[in-house]
Length: 122
Length: 122
DNA sequence: GGGGCGCCTTCACGTCGCGGTAACGGACTG
DNA sequence: CAGTCCGTTACCGCGACGTGAAGGCGCCCC
Image (cartoon, rainbow over all chains, first blue to last red):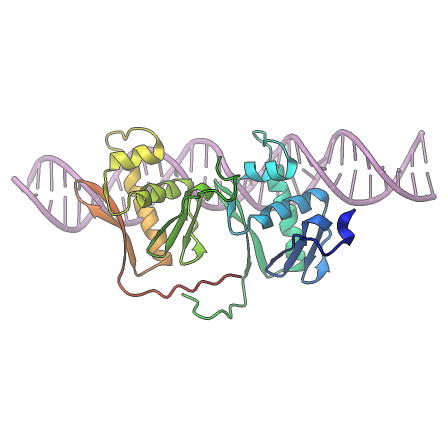
């Protein structure tokens, strides 16, 4: 594979302590590798690439499964669940995948505790 | 759907500290996402697109529900109320939705005092 | 072959929030 | 006073979602 050559443009997504390298099928959480299955990694990438956006299940399914979402298919929900479990296992304080009822999911890393940013309204 | 093409013209409404992206079903207040239901978001979009205009309930209902308003239907009032609550919760000093008795509602952000927006890109 | 192990998918069940309606009360008008 | 308009809250059915588990398939190893 082409994973060896580093001088090319390699997509690296860094968000809230996560580091995702789609081309290498690698995800690091706080420096340590996340053990993910193919589908789990696909969903994580699709969400992370659309960070801070609300992504519908249709778009998510099409991006990962490369097929239209069939009515009644709850695969997306299940893999979001699996991702949440594995993410929380490594980073218990971080909220990553947010549900927007009726719309879809939104990937936005948020730390529940530390808030050292200046000028935090409310 | 225009959501798929990344670099095209995406409708973004910016008004008084609010940022609304209809195509992404996303509304940001002072940089952080507003948690809205489908109907609430629909009403917000319809109002924001008609900012500074007095919009009748008939027009509002038709725009969001895509059906004519039936006599006695007070759904619009209820969702305006829900929107007001959620908007005030995030931006206590801003008045957004104004009532015009006998005519309808008008969306015009008004701040009672200056708000320091802390743009915090992660 | 046969057993074990992941992974993907589907199913079932419980919970919760949304959406829509009704109802009450206040403000205002004539 | 009756009548209108609107703000606000309460209520309920139902769909959306979270969650655990089972079935099915492919793969590896003994």
